Length: 202
Image (cartoon, rainbow, N blue to C red):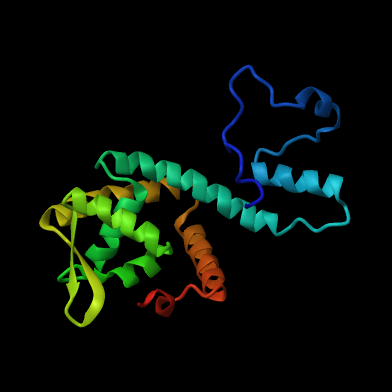
């Protein structure tokens, strides 16, 4: 589990102090207005284990907490279209693949970074909703193709417009230059970890 992501990143209920607050108040340093929850976690490790370097938490912990907070913000938007995040991901992968908006199950699975069992379950649900349909792959006797239905294309074409607007809102804490710099750093880290276009081919 990622440090700093296991609990609720939100504040304590109004009027209620977190556990141990009274005991720790005397030794708590003044908090900077630019300090986030991860900075406090790092400071706690430095105090309790000065023999360790907790600096990786500054990246990994923040990425994890950002993922949680961004997922929450996106989920609110997807609900307007009666979609969950994973449903949108599957529909979007098919839509951006181009005509005829069809991919193999293996290709979808690698793109989603999920297991075959999870992929099957998700496709079952989307097929019941009439958003995708499955058919045998004529080039592979054991293969299955997944294709957007007309209804699925209509839903994703509408949802993606609002989705991109929501992402812009969530990133508005950074200017365009900051967003480009962050995108480049994240791209380099993903390539380092092996997440490249060829890794999602199947």
